[in-house]
Length: 122
Image 1 (cartoon, rainbow, N blue to C red):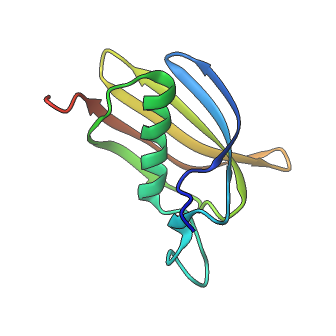
Image 2 (spheres, rainbow, N blue to C red; image 1 turned 30 degrees about the vertical axis):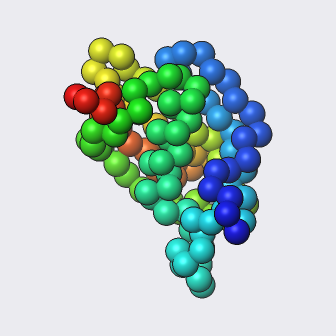
Image 3 (cartoon, rainbow, N blue to C red; image 1 turned 120 degrees about the vertical axis):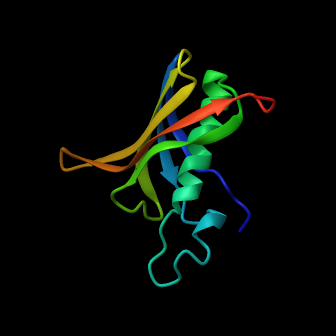
């Protein structure tokens, strides 16, 4: 098991925003040991993916400068289909992200947050 990123099913990029549909494959390395009886996607992985896709798709600065707000509300389980929404604010240098899913016309927010980004020398 060496896979670290989900399968991107669809992406819609309209800078400074992006919406991705992701399959959180059960064979992602981050599920190992987190937890053996009830695997779930670690919060640090969710933050890492939000930053990774923002850098790749929105060309935001790559240096993580801190979190302002973070909420982990519902676990993300293996093989889940989720939506990652990204919004970049150039003026404040902040990235807002949200992981959500839809089931039976009900939207579940799994996690959301706001991180401060910058260049490595800031």
